[in-house]
Image (cartoon, rainbow, N blue to C red; front, side, top):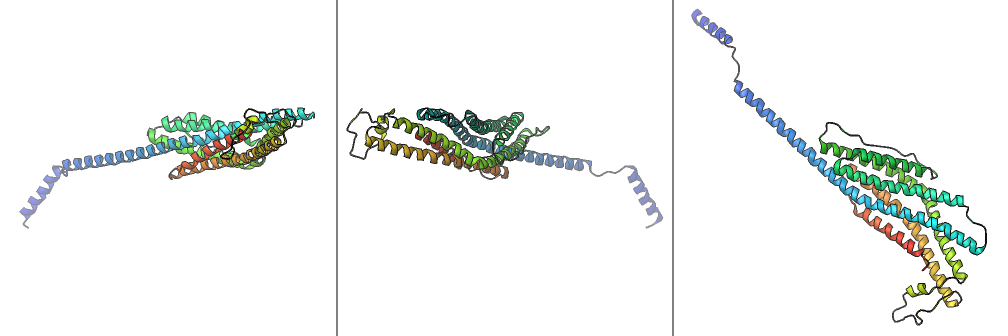
Length: 344
């Protein structure tokens, strides 16, 4: 290359530098815009995915709340029925003592202790109903404060019940917090998981207390049954009862019917006496067995409640059919015990 050519080339480079050459700004700007569009699209898809997941969690929580509320309602009704039975036991015992002309066999203070024990247990099931209603509200419209208030009352009621039970357990506590600046549905799903944990820890404590209290609870219920049938037998023996209504309910073998409609059946007739005593023995046996069955079913319901919350936490499918069956069975047992305890 000649000197003149070198000079021209150098001049060309200097001139090019003076023009402040830049790459194609249009292409760069277009590339940045495309990247921003892609980022926004990805963020939107992520947001939609989170909202979809949150919607699934809310739907599962609604299903869980509705199903478990049925089990808790059965627990609450059964607990109230036992309280009524023990109150009736006190009246029956008073009648028996009067008929036998003996001093009160059970001091009033002892009955009061029994009632206090049963009422503390009933308050737990009652508060569980309230807390599940709050859980449903949390799923419906994100009512965090409402749930926390109910959960705190639930923990307090379990503590109070524990004070009545030997080998009591310490109740763990877990509440939910409100999230600021979160996507509403996603924050709601997070709080539902926290609420699920709060219910789970309370139910585990309650389950241990029910196991520890099982024998005492069965004893209380069966004592009420025995007191009821004791007074019926005393009244029957004294000739103060007419068994015509009871015998009228018996279904004779096919092809037979009662020959004397409207007659009185009393203890004075040996055949009637044997029949009534057999019926009372059968009914008492059924009622005693129902007390044990009811206690077992109550504990199974609480175990199933725990399982459902563990399934919810793990994202597993919710098998709620068992809960409904247990609730129906407990209602049936309670009615059976009630019917067996009637002096018909």
